[in-house]
Image (cartoon, rainbow, N blue to C red):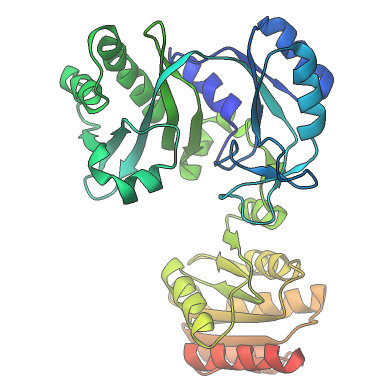
Length: 399
């Protein structure tokens, strides 16, 4: 689960992390009021969307010379004017894709005297089962570009969760960022604060870009991006309350209600599969035969009839779907349960696009019998390759 920048900073501030003063705003009036509370003389008006690259993004409907999604202004009235221009518009960045995201809220923040920018992030490293700390002197830009062009400027070290942060970790961070004196001491104090926030809140990633050194030698988290482990959200109702569903695909929101692993894509063939590996293989083979998957959907190993019906409804709710491929290998999941769910879903929702069903495994013959005797216009497949070819052919025939 992702949250907005202003929310991330509020969470980090709870752990003593130094962040600039700022206020969220949903209207131009609120933006102006926030600026008055801050007092100036410099204000930063920041679009709040779940995507990076906001400063270099562009707003739809504005000319090529228009400012991006992060703007520095010097008066309350300019804050209001920029808020009026930004709120309600679609911001397109390199992370949003061409569709962009509509800006529904802003963050009005005090300006900062930036002397130097750094990059810092914490994330779980699966290979070492530790928390990886990634640091670079090249902050304020895409870390992917730094990794590609100057990988030697990225330093990574690991913190063992059994021991936590030790003084030498702070020294490693200060050295990686080239900090000395007061700034080095602040880096040593900052790392355990960030680590505690990361662990206590079950974060999956904590990215600070940039971490800045000010002209008066203070370290400040100028921008922060946080995502949480969805499997641990039951422990954090305060974090769940921060969820902004307007930033998510409605189909993905609906899927989460039924504990379905669903990700919307841009293709035309809807997929319903059990098992993440099989789902990935299904998507790959659809592409192999010249089409594009409309989604990743893993109904899980123990899905019941209601879950299957919900999954089918979510797939058919996508207007881009021109055909559906159900690919089930029954282990824990029984093929007859899948078949009953598909039949019930089709009768309830209706079937306006070709449907190919491939069943294999536990109770496969019973599952096929349920499908065959349903009276539905369903295309049977013998294996995954056969199913992919049939659904691609059916979709092309319907165009």
